[in-house]
Length: 495
Figure 1: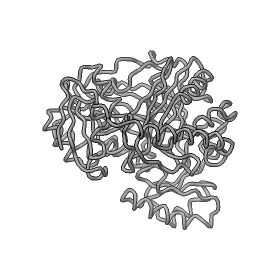
Figure 2 (figure 1 turned 90 degrees about the horizontal axis):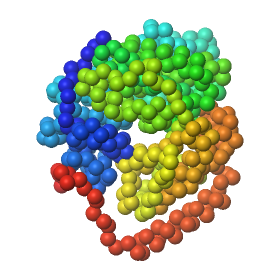
Figure 3 (figure 1 turned 45 degrees about the vertical axis):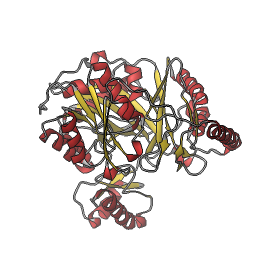
Figure 4 (figure 1 turned 180 degrees about the vertical axis):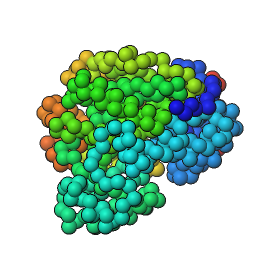
């Protein structure tokens, strides 16, 4: 077991933005750890900047000139006196070179060892590692095959199949193939896209699991050899391989299967000497056979649903583990209780092929009440720009069972008011009322192939008209913007 060189820290730099930065800062406040924010031009007045103890300007709005520039982040850590860096998710969170640079600078990296990131960030190495640890994998080709060798191996794998990029994710460098005649072209085009997106044109073949479900296992590991799982999450409702709605537990996983998949997930984590919070992702077929997809070596966007059913603060556990402390709980302590559903509230139009929407949030009213949690990084008068992803917030609702969580989510979605941009709230409202969601009769292809917003169009048009009137009223009657509420020791650095 590789033990991270860690030490207690009292000041943490969050190398991220938006809701995840605020989420990490809240955990730090609970633990008495000071926080340092970084911000681009576009985020000068963002909530994560206001919430931190200190904030430093790191560049222009494009992420390539700010949040992705490693030397700027390390310089801020040195200038601010931060002893540790948390990468959040996205940006540099799964960059082994950044993790290595942080540790080489004498700072504590709140994440797994760089080598674990390297192995699990390469789909072929991850696949081989999982296979060696007796983790079930989807039938497919071994690494290093030529195009001709992959074409020759395809009949043994069976159609339909997927051509997949070895590096990266998010659906880039991925091509479904149903007809053998289409395979050479799919290999070539997937390789070109992978090279453009990830700088690596390596692809491989994998059997396509029809009507599959995306089930993931949350794991926690410390530097003392303790590895536990915190049950599963159902993440099958996706579009273009991007998750839209998640829930925990899964409506199709039994207690026995949960225990089995959890132990398999822990085995995958042990295989790379994992330390920290991570997720083992599986694809499950209609017969409940499950296969390793990948490991996300970071905190997941959907981590709140796990927190709500287990009572475990995953960020606080991350921070403790990074300081060299053991986990505060054992596997026996993890008993799922109740149900949680998360809807990603995005600035995009579900009636126009989910086209991203930009603009200024003129009015924001967040839902509240029992069992409702909103993780957000925006506020009124905040500008949604094209520079970053379209997520406005995560709306998470908890109930004693799935139906109570569903009804509570519908109530919360009705209460959620945003004007100034188009959002996907109507999509979520429609989905949660759909009988196929109620009965959990969906898979990873459901949204793109079976779901329609047509029946909701009239109501959407009325909502849009009301929103336009409210936005106009706000512009007409608002002349000043209130100064942000700041902590007494808050410091602003930059221009």
